[in-house]
Amino acid sequence: MANIETIFQGEHEQVVFFTDPATGLKSIVAIHNSQLGPALGGCRMWNYESPQKALEDVLRLSKGMTYKAAVAGLNLGGGKAVIIGDPKKDKSEALFRSFGSFVDCLGGRYITAEDVGTDVNDMEFIFMETDNVVGVAETHGGSGDPSPWTAKGVVEGLRACVEARYQKSELAGLSVAVQGAGHVGGHLVDFLAAAGMRVFVCDIDKKKCELLAEKHRGKVSVVSTDEIYDLDVDVFCPSALGAVINEQTLPRLKCDIVAGSANNQLANPECGDELFKRKIMYAPDYAINAGGLMNVSIELGGYDERRANRMIRNIYYCMGAILQHSAQEKLPEYRCADRVAEKRIQEISRIKGRYKGENKPTFHGRVTRR
Ligand code: NAD
Image 1 (tube, rainbow, N blue to C red):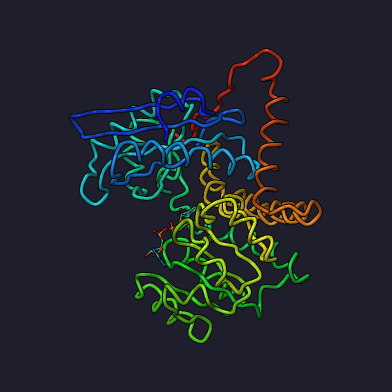
Image 2 (spheres, rainbow, N blue to C red):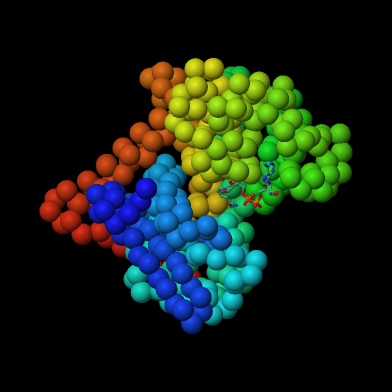
């Protein structure tokens, strides 16, 4: 369990608690690692059952961001923020502006963005108090909702998986089970159906699936949230919750490839080992779902959609390299992705001179769009 002692012994560079009783703000920002650059990661607003749970979440999520940015080839570190509160009841202009002013006092070490429970409107309030926020509206020079870009990136990663698994570059003719028809899942269904895949989709909100089935008549079928694990499909695409690859679901999977947008898909590392043993190819989640992060990161130097497209295409090459490494070394894919991330952090940190006695992080994270 995380506490002050474990934080001091751990690997996070900085953990900051912000409170503002006047607005009800209770927030934690965790900077896991800034060796590659300023720590970028979304702000999650969640009704945590205790501050302890919020602390554990922000520590875990910020570490994940370090690995995601490193594998994505970005000059960014890993950080995350949480606001303790109910996003349906506790949001206000004052709360987000208060949070924005605290983010500002970190001087660019941490850059915030949307996450579960926050959206582009909340970013606008934060933006009134700090430049260190991305994912703001297009009208402010931002890039808006990152979800379509995350979905695009998943398609690129899936292409690499299909090439490695079936030695063909086309997705057409293959079948896919998409779990979740939310912001990312909805776009994914559109892209995969357009690419000629036979799509099965489920969501606890069945209406979302029915709309997609109607839109892509004959190509998309709705299935139940339980049935999704048993389908005899080529690809399983988790795009809703984490930990869906677990001891209960694993024996039910009949697919050749698991590739989807959800964060933390493996309930534990052993599930990644078991997928590998069963010869089910696994696209490491933080490598395949980095499209949204790539897209918002471009805002830091002035948003350019062509640059976003070019960057997201890199997910195909990055995934190809991870899969090749996995095949050569006979190592589960998730471990190869960790290796790629850790190697890059080590190499680039050395080049930036951190091991030459200048043990001072370099920050160049000021947003330049205003
Ligand atoms: P979202 O909340 O818009 O969509 C999630 C969908 O999953 C919802 O429609 C919800 O009803 C559905 N759902 C919940 N429980 C389910 C269940 N048991 N079975 C089937 N469906 C269920 O979220 P999103 O932005 O689309 O993100 C989806 C996943 O991708 C999350 O794990 C998120 O962390 C991850 N992710 C998102 C982005 C992004 O750009 N939005 C980027 C990286 C990773």
